[in-house]
Image (cartoon, rainbow, N blue to C red):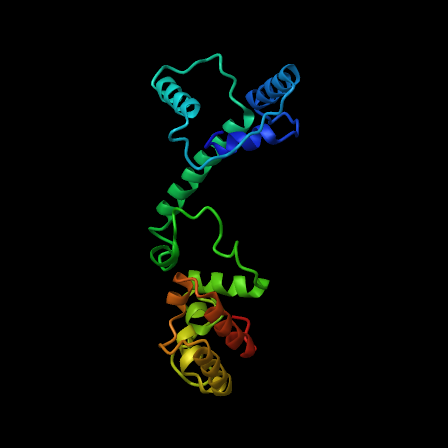
Length: 228
């Protein structure tokens, strides 16, 4: 019995590759020899905690004691462990680069959405069509196909909306532009049906991961016919 699930999984895994730890292979061999010599079956069991189990407490004590000693150069480090170190160093270097770049780009995105602890993209656990992911990413970065953003990037000469309003931004399209009044009525009905009665704040919805509400916003924006 052990509380180290990864070690037990490595021992159970019968796949033999160059990335396998030699110690996992040796452990499997020892188990095989013991079962053959003793005519018995050895079962590996994962437990949440090893408190109260003498063998595990002894192993834990020995591990802590060994950690205080100088490195044993005779221990063969598995390639997987070295790759894990390389991945971690690469990750930390990337985060440091992002933080440096924040001083001159990503100024909108960084304080609102940057999560240093996130190891996967925000959309890794949701099932959504590609344009939904693309649109949310554009909104998070504050770079989208509306007048205010295009004007800021010098793609157009004016940020004025076709309806005549001085600034075509996301808030104007969602809450004000008369060109989309019919769509806005339907959006209001859908939001009320979802028990959302507050003022629309897309950035807060994204921050709070309110995907169901954001999908209603997405349907509205898609219905405008604009590739935002």
